[in-house]
Length: 196
Length: 201
Image (cartoon, rainbow over all chains, first blue to last red; front, side):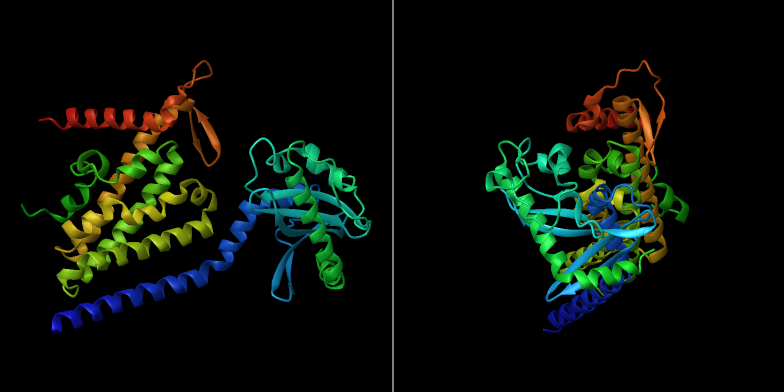
């Protein structure tokens, strides 16, 4: 009996100590890890959609709370003015969720760029949504007031051949990002002004 | 039989160098020695885990009940592996992405477990620290040596901090086979053979 109690006590104390150490360390590194993840996982997509910005969009980011959802927004400074904003969004692709970054110009009310960050689409077909600039380039300059759709649905975006579902998903993602933008517009514009 | 403290440290560098002499910790030895940078990154991570788990286990060796010692060892090792993982993620993210799953897998690497059972649970803190440091540095050297040959033969250059240093010259035709998995086995086999010849008295 004494032996069992001894075992339990020793193991509990060791586990508590290591758990406490890890919790403290996690607390201390969380912020840095978040920045690093943004930099390496989403960084390339953010830089792509906000090409030519004179600031570092990852450094000038802010968050807006919308109900339960927390949106990360990245600001791009063009010609000395914070005119571009990139939103993160996701939609259902052919296989699982697709994450994407949608950038728009708030002055001209036009899209500047769309880039897929994470996806599980078929290589060579749906995966082109991420790799083929011919597809993602189509979104550049599209007005944000008209609905974004593929040509099959009466829109103006040419779908990737053989991957209509993926192309639709990208359009859906862009539309939902635009909806978020419309909904949070006053807050977004206000926070953007703070960025130099 | 009793070793001096210096010997406790230096044995890990040659006489008991982990992958070549003890033939332990082979999974990362085969998997991540495709570039020198990966190899010493892994080596440093293992050295850290090994040293601190040795310290903790030898400090607690009289308190830990023998029946649950393996559980206690795993808790200690896993804790330090998590520490390494978080720190790497926070400060060297690109290395963390390249080493990927092999960082959490240090938990089941034979070296920390083997040293905990065979050494740290029997000797004092000072000896265990030196043992951990020595074996860890030995492991780092072994991985780097293996990676050095593999990377040079496979690419003709060594890439450190994203800067390639050409070694073989422009006319060298890279022998890509050596960065693939079978190349790792062949390289390791040759290294073990060389170590055996060198170690023969």
